[in-house]
Length: 89
Image (cartoon, rainbow, N blue to C red):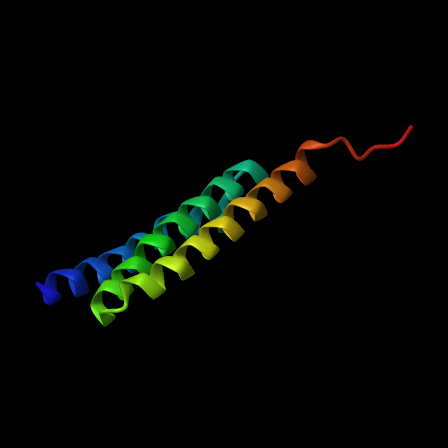
């Protein structure tokens, strides 16, 4: 069963490359923001898988919750910054 979780962790690490390309080559800022959100979500699952592998899931759940809150707040701040009209007339 442990080898299954290791395989899943390696698979998630490889799958993170797809949204990373979206962040680098995204046509708009909002596409880059969506890619960053997808990377954050996959990283969250990867943190929980590592917590299960190390046998300390309760500690890693706290880390994952803090990471998800920071990811969400960061996305809101970036979206708010780029959605406002900064041109002063």
